[in-house]
Length: 124
Image 1 (cartoon, rainbow, N blue to C red):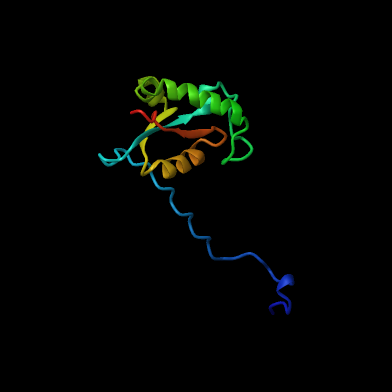
Image 2 (tube, helix red, strand yellow):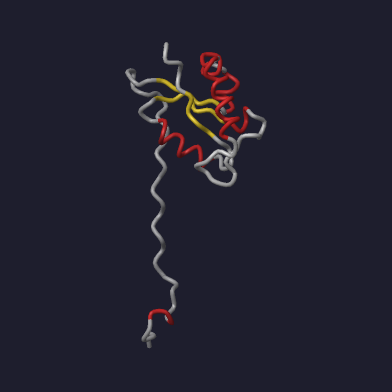
């Protein structure tokens, strides 16, 4: 017989939980009119000093991240076209229309590694 009080009943379920919604995949080639940017693995480029091990949506050292971001911005074209960084996945070309979904996917794929967008210089 079922318990009179739900707090005393069995809380297990024989029904499987629904599968989580799929994380949107990054668009391989953004639309031609999409503004380009790069998603950068700040953890790899800082030899592990910048990370998000304790919170997937935070950075452990915003000052160091800002300094490295400014360095990348000055040499944006070099980073955006670096074949080795692109091949390793530590720099990912992206478009303004899809970077947020791509960033969410990267945070799931590489937990603890801090990825963030770097937009091209305004004078481009």
